[in-house]
Amino acid sequence: MGLFGIFAALWDVPTIVPCDRHADVRRSPWWLQRVYRRPSHRDFPLKVAARTRERTLSVTTLSFKGEFHAPSLGHEFFPDALWFADVANGWFTIDRLMFVRLLMAAILAIFFLVAMRNPKLIPSGLQNVGEIMLDFVRIHIAEEILGKKEGRRFLPVLATIFFVVLFMNVPSIIPFLNISPNARIGMPLVLALFGYIAFIYAGAKRYGFFKYLKSSVVVPNLNPLLHILVIPLEFLSTFILRPATLTVRLMANMLVGHIILVLLFSATNFFFWQLNGWTSLSALTIVAGIAFTLFEMLVIFLQAYIFALLVAVYIELSLHADEH
Image 1 (tube, helix red, strand yellow):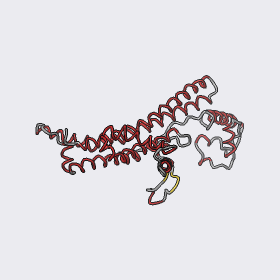
Image 2 (tube, rainbow, N blue to C red; image 1 turned 180 degrees about the vertical axis):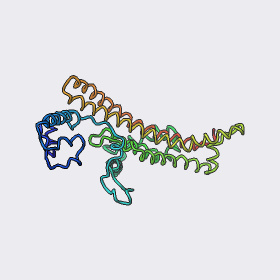
Image 3 (cartoon, rainbow, N blue to C red; image 1 turned 180 degrees about the horizontal axis):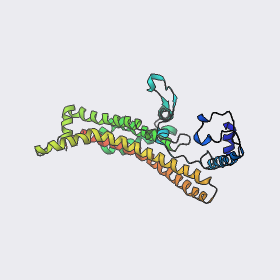
Image 4 (tube, one colour; image 1 turned 90 degrees about the vertical axis):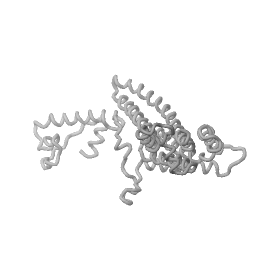
């Protein structure tokens, strides 16, 4: 039907189904093969049915007319490539999610470069905001868990993790971005590996690598027979589950939050444009959507705080690995 048929469906304008006697019906879908025949008096009901079907679809499935967008993991979290799809067999492909990652990383870097470009004894403006944020990480995460000496030593690691997680979570509630790069496993995995390297480095630096490894998995004063069971469990818990749980916790929270927001706002659009008794439900879903957006703001901060806090705890355990 071409562009005219699409616009007619959008605006509920009755259209005439084309019936060309020369059309190749074998290339048409089965439900159009009877329509693309030579017109006859028996084809009139089919034309009416086709027009009715177009009007029905225009109300329930087309944009701005009550369309319901069920979230799709493939489309939402693995969108089509924007740039560099053919470079190095796609290793440097930039899709929408990667673009958001790069954008937020640039904003984070620019924020601290501008805030700290000319530090003053009495801070003001962006410097004041930056110092308040850094003081929160220093006091409530680094020094709270590691003490003043070790807290200051590992502050760059913890601050980097906290702010990267925080800034990467924020796009989930920003219009036109509407998705957190942490909802796909790549970024949480990189952050978890960064924390993993940090706490292994902390233990290896203090004890030496092999003594640290032994202190982490061997529980002293234990029945030798129990070591057969305990050593594999301690190794699994310390060196496998720690980075795995850091990764999955962050990714799952941001993924679920995005899906719930999509469902609530899609349901609002769908119910509102029914223009019948179901329309009243749109008020409920929009209120729920706004409420969950506010809750998502809390989750954005909590996930950054919990991620950095757990890395600090793992560093502390590595620094005292011999104190089982």
